[in-house]
Length: 276
Image 1 (cartoon, rainbow, N blue to C red):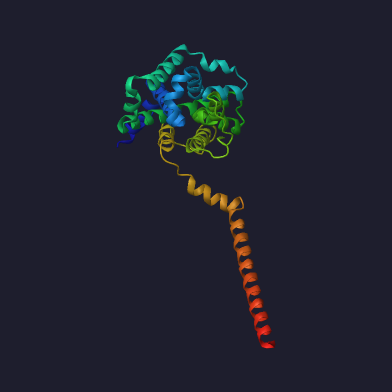
Image 2 (image 1 turned 90 degrees about the vertical axis):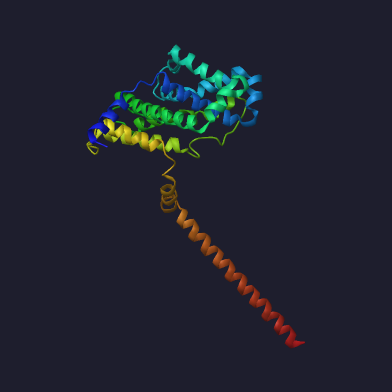
């Protein structure tokens, strides 16, 4: 592809309006995650507790805005200031849970439809991360860690609010904390925040911002490439290799002690037989 055409495509991508189509994709993916979390009890719960179901959906859909506002000391209710977004999110929630014969849900689960929606979701995730980093940088221009935190919760806020969202549905799962087992979306959001900071605050990245933006969309939309490096890093830096070495030495000593005891037992029996 011609580099100029590629750059023009990247520029067009950064200027895309998220409302309403990309926001719809975001709300749809949120609804799919909620339905998968409810599993076989989805039908019964949505009929018996529609208000709790709606609150749970809205909390997940606007989790990034809610958490970033809370962390930055801004009004949390400002996350719901857009009436258009509230109406759009409610409409998506309703058709996902209450369409006749579950037609809309089955249509969205059809692979080509689902693939297109997920691609749109990753585009808006990248936009949210970029906006989060820029907003944090405007308030705390010298604090990279705050930029990373806000960019991360903007990109994957629903995972951090999962514990509260489940409590609203009457389910207590204290182990469902994102810090204990970060999802790939969280790790990708952290990586994307770091790249945006390097692009904004340093001269380490000389490429145009639109190309950086496009590259990050490609990164957040793939499967987890960090897992092999995490395993290696944990083994080298967080005691994994030493634990394995300790277990090996312990098992070796145990086996040697067992062999010595067996030999002593055999020798003792042999001496007794000789005396007899």
